[in-house]
Image (tube, helix red, strand yellow):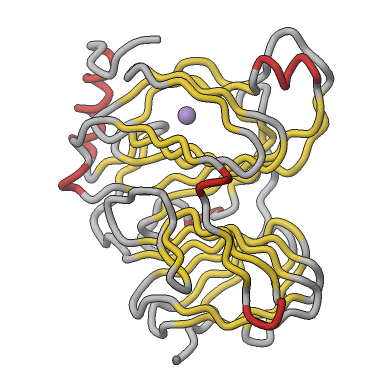
Length: 287
Ligand code: MN
């Protein structure tokens, strides 16, 4: 298997608050919303933060999305979701919520009421996945994916474990339904591990390191940094210098025009205007 070559290591951007609930770092930095990371659009990582007990759950009130999917992965704490299509759900550690905004949805994202009353550590990631032009007008959808339904693949030589959220690895298939082919794997590596993982030729590969430190092609990639790869090649080799937690993201690039404006990601300014008009007219629903 020819290995994909490291193209760039993206530096850690400064964190900012999303509502009062999530202190996130936008890890793709200047490559967010470009075809260099397609089909992915952006990744916010909220490192563990201790919250005091509160009767009023912190988070983000009702807001729209259109043209893409939001994927929320909880590591600590609980996130509660409600949307204008009538979906509600609470996800906890290891769980994933895969929301398809497509033609438009309004939702809210808070720490769960129960977890908020108790207080404690919350950490999560939110990945935005683009939709092909042909699917941006699809009906909104919602997948609540529980930890127990996510296959765990033991890596060779006791190197660690990969939870396959989407895509497939070693015959294990991730439960997430996606519009285009992609892998989303929550990978935990032991210190000193060296692994080679099979991927698709021509796929984009983006590898954020949440904790620990890895070496790829002789270059160090530390916590909070993102390794971006060339499309050529069908495998990746990773060495863990410390116990590490990474999110492996690979997929077939869409290579269509990307026009992003706030919570809307379309193919042109005219499409953005249409989405804003739809939202103002109430066509994305209400909470
Ligand atoms: Mn949102």
